[in-house]
Amino acid sequence: MSQPEEGERRRMRPRQAAAIALPNGFTLANLFFGIFGIVAASRGDFDAAARFIVFGGVADTLDGRIARATKSGSRFGEELDSLVDAISFGTAPALIMYFAVFQSSRWEWIFCFFFTACAVMRLARFNVEQAGRKTTHFTGLPSPAAGGILATYYWFSQTSLYTETIVADLPWHQMLRFLILGLGMLMISNVQYAKVPVVNFRSVQGIIGFLLVIGTLIGVIFLPKQFFFPAGMAYVLYGIGRTVFLGLLDRLPGRDPSGDDEDEESENAPPRRRRRRRRSNRTPSGPEAGREESSA
Image (cartoon, rainbow, N blue to C red; front, side, top):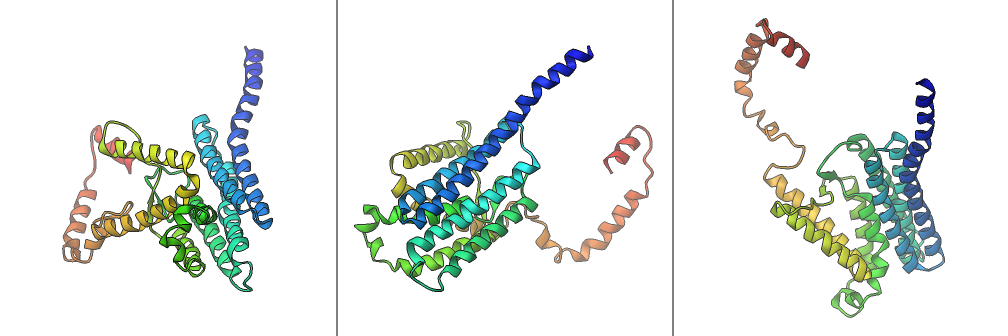
């Protein structure tokens, strides 16, 4: 029996190696598109540069889903994904903006540095606080969203929605400075941003999520240049508005609603502590004793 078992293990190893390599391959594809976006921007091809950042975002979405589907997630994959995201959604969009808008200035490159630094700090904080945990929201603006907004601004500026409306009369050169600063600060902020909406037909929330997904697919396929930048800005404003609204209602995710009442209830604290002491002095007996000790 030992020989067949050993042979079976040997046959399984290539499959396991392939399952592990597949999501990492998509992660490296994300890196490829990020570097290619920088190269395209340096050559003045900003249309292609934006396209490569979008392709990188697709690869970044697929690597995580494939890792979960094949149960091949690893610490190595998490670290690799963060390092690649720092380049594809931090450095690359900032350099695209520099080559497209700020290259003629001697000092405005500092905005690109600020955006990249915030993206790196946001990814580091995500690894510490949220990586590997099931949550319904992101703390801080996700770096792919922030980088996608910057990279697709050029796309939006070439459309009739921009050139033939009052939008073109806005002082975009000055506004882009504040946009970069704002996106950077949002990445390292505590503003709550929702993840991919739940899709089902059993609840109103699920139906709304389904409509959002369908609308996004239609916009991405048929109107990509008109869709990405306005949709990204809507996502940014939605997160800010949602956080302010839930903050006023004291219903932010992960927040202890009883935390603000500690000072008001401090007068009642001593009796509560005395009650806990009386409970703790009781010696458990019978079959419940083992359960209480194990739960402690």
